[in-house]
Each structure stands twice: as C-alpha cells, then as structure tokens.
Length: 270
Ligand SMILES: [Zn+2]
Ligand SMILES: [Zn+2]
Image (cartoon, rainbow, N blue to C red; front, top):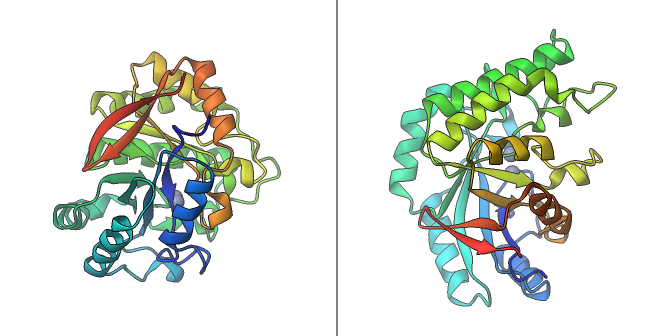
C-alpha cells in the first residue's frame, strides 16, 4: 500500500546540497510510478548560516511561479513547502517571508546552534558527545518555546548523524526529560513531528526521531505526524516509508498528517 505515502520532506535542485537532476517534474514522475498520494517540496532556507554552501537564498517569486506551472500539469497532488533552519534571532525575518509567500507547509529544523553548524562539525569542537547532544536538545527546546510559525518539527535528534563520534547511537534515557519537555511544547502548540527516514540511508538504522520518541509523543497527546524522506535526489523519494509506517502502526497511530495552505488533514494508514 503506497497510496497514502505523502512525502512531506523533499529537496529539489533549488536546495544547494541536492542533486542537479532533482527537478519537481522528475519527482512527480517517480511518485506516480510509486502510486503515491503526493509530494511536498521543502527546499532549504538557512538564513544567516555560517556554511557558505547554504548562503544563497531562493528567489521565492520565481519559485512560486515555477511551482504553479508544474502543478498545472502534475499527475499527482503536489504542495509547496519549505524547510527553515531556525535560529533564535531570525523570528522576524522568517515571519516576514512566511507572510509573503503562500507556502502549504513549513518544517522547522535546527541546523545551527549558537552560530555553529553541525554539518561542518564546528558545533562539536571542544564538546564531549554528551555536551553536544544536550546543548542541541536545549537549543531545540528554546526554539519551540520562542517560535511557533511552523507545522512540524524536522528530524528531531538528527544531531547523532554528525560529530564523528565512535558510536552514533545515543542513550535516549539520558535525554528523556528534555525531549519530553520539547514534545510537550509541540503538543501544546498543536504542532506536529516529522518522521524523517534519512537515518536509514545514513546507516544509523533508525528514523529521526527514534521510535521511543514517537511513543512519548503519542503518550503526551501528539496527533500530527508527517512522513518525510529528506530526499536530495529522485531515487530517495519516499525511501523506507514502509519501515516508518510499520513503526507508526506499532506505536498506535492510525493516521498520518498532510498539509495544504498550512492546514492539517489526515490520511488513514490502516
Ligand atoms: Zn534538515
Ligand atoms: Zn531537509
């Protein structure tokens, strides 16, 4: 069953780290072949990032126009989303953009903490693994407390992907209290959590976040969960969604969320 697979985290070649062949049209073709419910394009916006690669900002007037043209001829439902890289001083700039461009869906992600990037390793310098992970979760808690102009929180716990530590797993109990605090705020603000399947492709064998976090989210009253592959190339569209759906069912979710014009609706997965 793939007809409820709605990928809510997909990068086209407008994201600087995506495959040059990754066009909206090619993703649509692939989604049709897979008999998917739809695709949400969520290209990066990392304002004031220290990483040069991500410093180019998309021209959203052009992007929206292009999206509407592609949508006219699309054989499946597509939506225009965005993945914002949150930092605490960006509230006004992000709100201004989100007020101006009619996105269907907004993922709030953290790629930088204290001005230091995870991707290039700067964030980890001088920190033990535990200090780095704890500071990451603290900064996520600060983010969800300060900012709520988003629909789902992206790849919570993906910090484990970076830092070059010997083991990329983490003892989740150590961070239970702070993760539950984060989840409580997300639930209270009626926001959602994304299940990001890219962890499988990075050889971590888990989604971001881990299934335990998903269980806590449900226990704390969380209802909104989106599926996201975080594809940066067409072949990765909806990658490992079968495993993610099995996890959701195991935890007791019977529906996945989908967004249009920033409004949530649900698709049955049973
Ligand atoms: Zn991301
Ligand atoms: Zn992404």
